[in-house]
Amino acid sequence: MSAAMPGTDGATRERVLRIALPVLALGLAVVAWDLVVRLAALPPYVLPGPGLVVRTLFDNAGVLFGSLGVTLVTTAEALALAVVGGVGLAVLFNQARAFEYAFYPFAVILQVTPVIAVAPLLLIYLPQPLAVLACAWIVAFFPVLANTTLGLQSVDRNLVDLFRLYGASRWQTLCVLKLPAALPADAGRHPHRRRAGADRRRGRGNRRRFCRRRLGTGVPHRGSWLPARYSPHVRGAAVVVAGWYRHLFPAHRAELPRPAALA
Amino acid sequence: MIRDAAAPLVSLRGVGKTYANGVRALDGFELDVRKGEFVSLLGPSGCGKSTVLRLVAGLAPPTSGTLASIHSDSGTIGFVFQEPTLMPWASVADNVALPLRLSRMPDAAKTDRVARMIDRVGLSGFASAYPRELSGGMKMRVSLARALVTEPALLLLDEPFAALDELTRFKLNDDLLALWRALGTTVVFVTHSVFESVYLSQRVVVMTPRPGRVAREIAIDAGAARSEDFRTSTDFAQLSRAASDALRAAMQEHAAA
Image 1 (cartoon, each protein chain N blue to C red):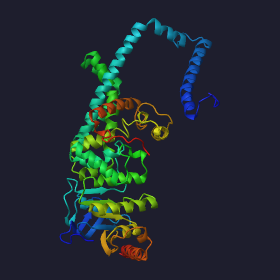
Image 2: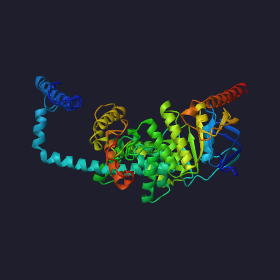
Image 3: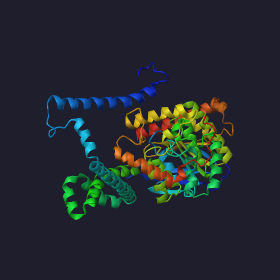
């Protein structure tokens, strides 16, 4: 990790550090955990050591990984439903103010109600897998709704005026302006994808500046074009939604042939 | 230079505009803009210049008086804001194509017109670049191309070059004049720069602040001789002084009132 390493520039070193440091820290934490358990002679029912945890993981692999599968599927389903419901409702709110005034409080109530309080009721009302799905959905739904609502409202006022000036329909304003604006800057135009030739160095500079501004970090990752106020699962979902949106509305792609080089 | 002295393209008679918060932006505002004219509205910040443009564009209704303008729906009015106001997720070509896209022009015709307009504002080779890759002046050129791509009868510019450095601004002033001459568009240009208004326009309308009213009109009779020479000529200096005096008088009048 020294600067004298052949072919190591600042960026590579930073990347190595960003991987090596957390791995190292995690390793030290596990060692400390193990030492505490051994030195204090803690019984496993108070705190099992890392070795025992790993052994149990292997011994009961069938049950545990089966459960993991169920959890992951439920998570994915709940996220998908939350995205559909959240984005759909946000668009509805945006199009009809009265509707937003009437129903936004419901969304807030849903959000502030502890899941643990409604879970027993849901288990009575619904069959068990569906009740679990509903619980996961409640958790995921509100951030999607809130962030999309905010995104749809944060459109440049002048651009809205421009659309009015050209007599754009509600539908055009929604699809061409508000939805892309709600997916924060450069969705699908992820700088990762546009680095080639002479543009390469500048692209990297832009990307890093972009990430620093948006996330307060110097290193981009998946969904890094989203502002930091978005929680990780919303970012993940937005990456998926952005991909689909660009697939469904390809009009955002350049319509003219790309010039040989950008001066 | 007045190409059609008949009916004005835009006519405001005793127009007043009071906003919901009680601010009287305009009061008894009178303005005629004839076809093919280049008119500047000159005044300090917050004197209702932008309000005039918004009314003319049909983006807001006047609260009193009568206003005759052209209908804006089909791209007959181009508008350039103080900021470039581009869609950051769309390429230069897509941004310029926006008005045509909104009017549902077929793709083939659109592509050709967009490419021509991009060339015209001097951005050849940048069609697929993104706004974040461009300088402030280049972004403004994209904004100008977008406003002109529908070949509008009327072009409204709201302090478009205020945020640019002087050299870039001079260059864009010259390019705007060249475009105006080539396309024959009627232009209403809002600025708080005395020199810019005198350099560009055939007529400078000096406004008083709060409520906005016409204080004085100054005709700039420099024909087609707008170039670096005009900028350093004594004519230009005298006209600038006249406009500057009118502006100061307008502001004092306001302060005394």
